[in-house]
Amino acid sequence: MTPPPSGPVCTGASKAALGHVPYPSFSSYVRARGPVLLRTARSLTANPCDAEDLLQTALAKTFMAWERIEDQRALDGYVRRALLNTRTSQWRKRKVDEFACEELPEPAGLPEPDPADRQVLHDAMWRAVMKLPERQRQMVVLRYYEDLSEAQTAEVLGVSVGTVKSAVSRALGKLREDPELTPVR
Image (tube, rainbow, N blue to C red; front, side, top):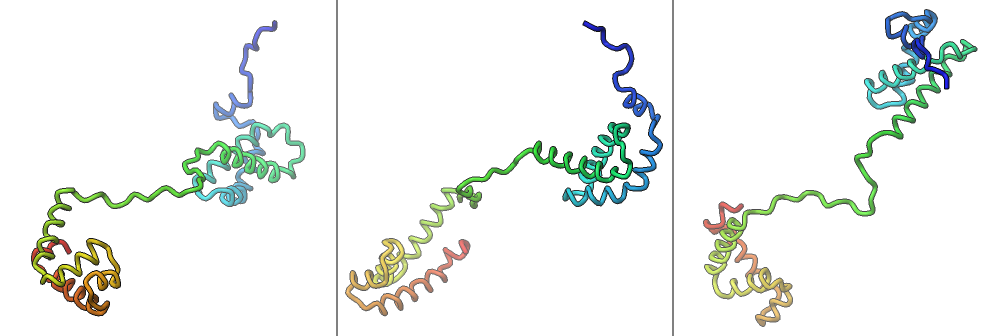
């Protein structure tokens, strides 16, 4: 078994950490091509800040491989490939907040009214219905409490459908004008 090396493993990284840039041509490359590469990064992301981070990461990868890049004319292609690969890795690692499903979840509805308020409304409505003339009251009860159609209501009471329509219309008008029901509207 061989002993571990005594110095830093990556000399390029330690010099970069100390502020020493061993590749002055890398700096000049970034200064010259940075705006073009940033446009490419922006086309890969929706957020300009994410594009800057993406370019920074791709340039860091390029810096680490700078000595291995033989053809300096292919630098743009190398950085673009690093941008694409980095963006693909980010996309794969992203947190998924939404899940596809067969049925959409029900939207949150309005909160249920207080049962006491519902009872007050029910009592007020029933008192208002009891104030109606007997024939109108019968028709309103059959139509809206028993949920019968106009034809069924007419048949039960032995009157025409037109009579049911007009009597119910007048009854609803009286209910709309009832002062006890006014605060409900």
